[in-house]
Length: 179
Ligand SMILES: C[S@@+](CC[C@H](N)C(=O)[O-])C[C@H]1O[C@@H](n2cnc3c(N)ncnc32)[C@H](O)[C@@H]1O
Image (cartoon, rainbow, N blue to C red; front, side):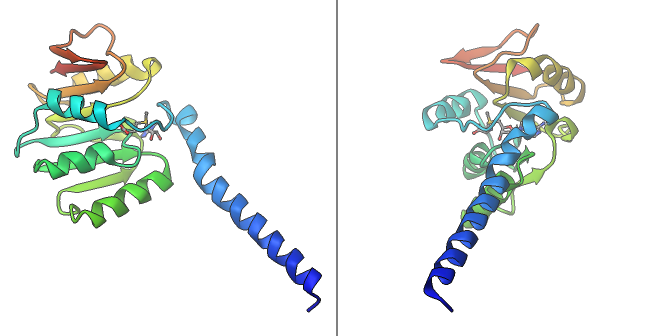
């Protein structure tokens, strides 16, 4: 084969592969517009520490992260030795990444991330819910959590408060609520 044609084919296949990868990774970043939620912005480690402190996790806790991103809150909760830690996430790439990291950390007996909308999450058994969403969904999330969580459950929300709820704790920009 002519070396020019070979280089042309190589360049074309590299271009197609990188475009496909970009579509796989970046196109689902728009899904929150359709599924009602926040875009992917990971919680920084300093804020994670505040969230964990406010959550005060114990071995009896069943933790849920609604919109779990790369699974960092799920993984760190599982490492604290909770009974279970489950994330709900709509971005398929982030779900894969999170479950790969869970497996790598050998936490898959207690932790998992489900590819599902947080609006369909079963939170009836959760004792701790982590949130990092946006103001436009906080009222509706509050209604879902009030209706479905057991009494005494803790909700730890990064950055945004739940309208009409009174926090039982607040540190930095993180709110703690109890049902
Ligand atoms: C601000 S990020 C927070 C990620 C993670 N909880 C953290 O603290 O690092 C919000 C995440 O929610 C996800 N998300 C948005 N709407 C959602 C929905 N309806 N159901 C499930 N996940 C959703 C986004 O894809 C994104 O990963």
